[in-house]
Image (cartoon, rainbow, N blue to C red; front, side, top):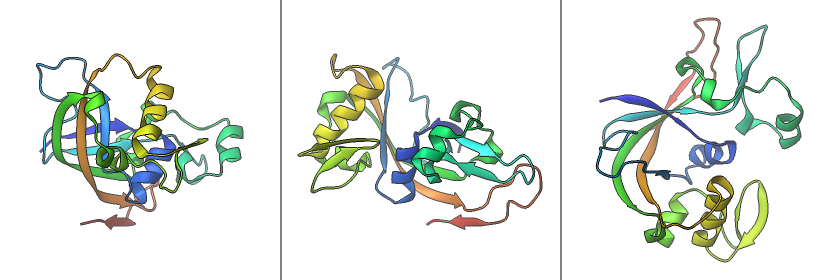
Length: 181
């Protein structure tokens, strides 16, 4: 079993915590190589936007903050710089496959964790969609610029196996761990 980092936005972190997100799609740069994120049985630790308290070392996460707090707080650290110790989420990879983006099913779009019906939407954009697939397409275009070409993607199915409720960077008080089976 290997453990690797993976970056998620604040809305997608919330979808994982709420149990709505169990799949992610990542562009496959090379289709003739193994998935760089791992294989079934491997673990992914989630990198997300965060800030440690300078006094206590307790970590706060942008996914938990009010939108105006995230926007106005200058000390939020980019998820790319999150050390392993600051991560609160661990995911277990259940399945990995490669497919073309447009082969995604409606069930796959739901598993991507977008906000639920009656009006699907893609946070933080309030645009409503009739289907999860339409909402996912909108999200993909905002993240990657376009829906075409029909690019190859890694589809990583996972389950959340750990959610730490209290993370502190400058002490050994990282003991509040909620195991999720």
